[in-house]
Length: 207
Image (tube, rainbow, N blue to C red; front, side, top):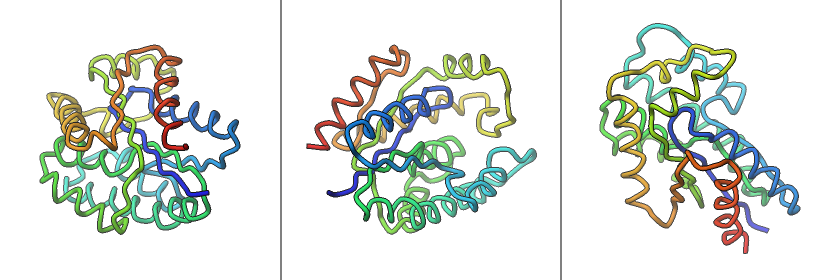
């Protein structure tokens, strides 16, 4: 049984964690072994990098930020994702290289192609079988985040201006360029409806 690599993408507050957890539970109920991964912070090393790029207060140079995310990604793929795929598991992961292209490329206004190439080099070219993009108006995402009981400082969530708009536009451009890989969903839809659409697409890959 071959492995399957599924990633979830979208702006903050779009529901990636909820939908990826529901998909993992469903896959396990169908007898598939699931490895749930995330970026950044999916490994012990990644947790340290996550603190640096997301929770450390103060300026981080955009290129340094991109390199730190790429380092986390390279280690995560080498130590978690590839071994799981080679063992036939389904890897369900929150964020992958599309996040870097959107956030560090468009958001930080670096060259998106260079950011993508950096991750492809770090991961030896591994691409997902399916990327689920939960598209949401950034204002709605901020409202959802504001309803959380306990907020932890997050550098990217704190970005204002047109940063979230540039990120969203970049995601949609990526999806338009690779329609066979992406499933784009309106993240304002009910949780159950979103999950049903995701399962339909994943079912086709499983068969």
